[in-house]
Image (tube, rainbow, N blue to C red; front, side):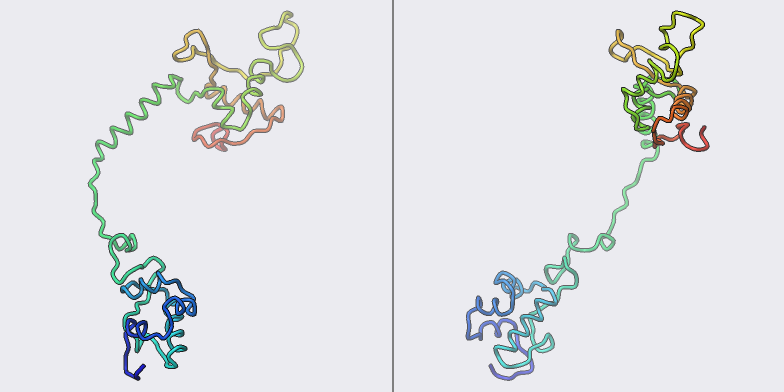
Length: 224
């Protein structure tokens, strides 16, 4: 190899006395990587340095990016070529087209969704199904059902007292309604007052429960 001021990647590859396969093994790269670099794609700094060092070792000359043309350093781990397109540019570098929003339409949608949910439940304001109240506070629904129907502590089971002088077990008060779509069945729900009473019941009997993530629930401090 004649001593010159500059060289190209192609002439260094073409002038090798060994095969490109052997060269890639010495440089610690794969042949597809070298092929991509020869086509003008950018490479990682570690890959470029390894190639230049291997050329220097084989030719007995010092090769750097200053005297070798055709090698392009990769600016970022995702850059694969000389030119970045919109798909490789950072998100904040891609021109953004502002989409006008129809606030009136969005407001109607929000109102329609809210009304539909309100219609679906059919419950009084601030009321919640008993099964949901128990689940929200990490209490098993079977356990909470017993709290409503059987109660805890001394006395008779609610609704089954035969002697008016006997005390009734402490229990959670609840409301009932026909189940939507199943008029012959009923489901239990709690009004806002009954929810507060249920929480007090759990505290009195050391029942383990947790605060829920529902805004307005009396389990949160300041709501009781």
